[in-house]
Image (cartoon, rainbow, N blue to C red):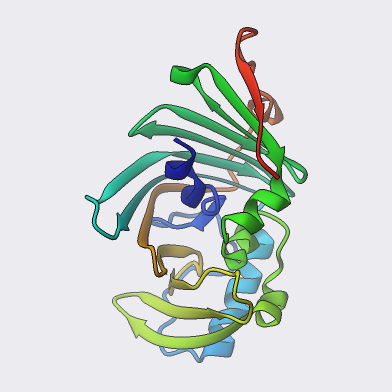
Length: 229
């Protein structure tokens, strides 16, 4: 179960997040094709700074070598500076909540709650930090500290940015952002072991989100299991 969620929560956590983009981001009323890499990154920086809360649905396809493609679907809600909730519904029901310190993964079918350190979990799972720029605590200005950024150009209303990690334990990322809102729309994460493609839709920027949803009630008979360090 955790292997299924480990990638989406990086993202998801993240990812970021991707989708058919709606209103709510100030300063981008029209499409802006023909921009340079630095101009695109500057617009992303302004957009990320304007996000206070975010809600979307996601679909993630995971292709592992020698195995059928896995599909994960669910709903993501986040509240800055560091609150995250993921309600997974496919293939299994699972609830993930996180703040700046802790991460909790509740699996109703197993009657189990995994708990652990958020930063350690992200590092162990190779979460691509650029996705955190839209909902959490990794500013766009710090991208170049961890990544070499390549510009893939503009096509069909999207700009492509390619992130090549400078550290061996970081995850590569290809990100497509809208030329209207400069939020992510598609993500592709290749690795030696698997390939992950992500699409987010029904995206709402800065919707009202109650703080209480990040403190869900877990049944009293749930078994609490610490994540391995």
